[in-house]
Length: 316
Ligand SMILES: NC(=O)c1ccc[n+]([C@@H]2O[C@H](COP(=O)([O-])OP(=O)(O)OC[C@H]3O[C@@H](n4cnc5c(N)ncnc54)[C@H](O)[C@@H]3O)[C@@H](O)[C@H]2O)c1
Image 1 (cartoon, protein in one colour):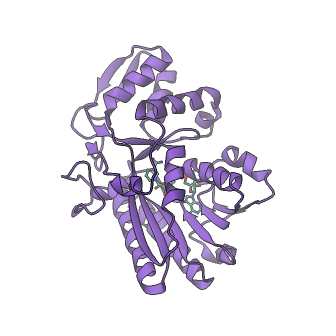
Image 2 (tube, protein in one colour):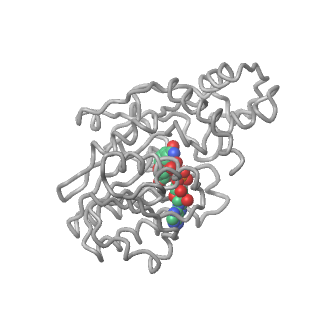
Image 3 (cartoon, helix red, strand yellow):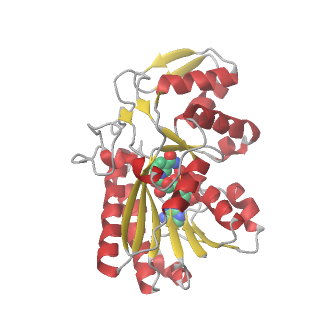
C-alpha cells in the first residue's frame, strides 16, 4: 500500500510510520516539524520506501500533488495540545479543522478515498456514562481542542456520505510509550528532574484517566482500517483507569523519589480537563484487538524511554 502519513514526525505518527514500513508499505510523510522531531524519523529517513515532505497542511498548494497514487491516508497532524487552547483560540480551528479540510480536499482532487483519523476522547466533554460508548451523547464541548476534533469528524463523515470516502475515526484516550513528548508523565518527570523535592500537581490528583500504549494504539488503527465506503468509529483505550495520584506513585517509585506533593486543588487540572475519562472499547475489541500493556506498564515504558532519550527534553 502507498500510505500518506500526516504528522509523521510526531509521537504517534513516527511509530505508525515505522510499523507501516516494517510491514512492507511505502510511506510519504507530510510534516512541518512544529511539534515533531527529526530524531523520531531518523531510521525511516534511511528506508528506501520512505519519503518526507516538509510542508504545512495549511498551505495545500505546496503538497496536495503528494496525494497522487496514494492508497490510504493516516491523518495524525494536529495541534495535539488540549491544555492551552484558550490562550490561542484560532490554533485548534486552523491546525485541526482547516488542516483536515485541506487533507480531505486534496484526497478528493486525486481520487483518494481511504482515511484514518486520530480523534480524541475529549470530544465527549464531561460524559455521564462510564465506560463511555461511541454513541454516548456529547452535547457540551469543554475544550477548543475537542470542539475542533469533533468538527473534523463531522467533515470526514460528510465526505464519506457525499463522496464515497472510506473513513475510520479513532477516539483515543491519552497515549503513552516510546517518543512520547507531551502530557502529564512528561511534565511530572521533567519537573522532578529539575526539583526532586517537590511536585506541583494541577487539580487534586484524583482525576481518573485511562491510557493506552502507543504500539497498542497503532495495532488498533491498522485493525480498524475500513475498506468499504462509509464511516467506522472506534474508541481506543484500555479497560482500566488510574488516578493522577497513581501515575505519580509509579513515576516517583521509578525515579526513587519521595517529593512533597503540592496540589493546586479542584477537580480539574485546567478548564477543559475532564475529571474522568474511561472509554468503552467493545467495538474495537470486536475486531479481535486487545491491548498488550496495562497502564502501569505503559507508564514504565515511557519512563524508560525518557531515561535513554534525554534529547526529548532538550528539544522542547
Ligand atoms: N498523544 C495523545 O495522547 C493523543 C490523544 C488523543 C488524540 N491524539 C491525536 O493523535 C494525533 C497525533 O498526536 P501526537 O501525540 O503524535 O502529536 P504530536 O504533536 O507529537 O504530532 C503531531 C505532528 O503533526 C505535525 N503538524 C502539526 N501541525 C502541522 C501542520 N499544519 N502541517 C504539517 N504538520 C503538522 C507536528 O509537527 C507533529 O510532528 C493528533 O491528531 C492528536 O490530536 C493524540
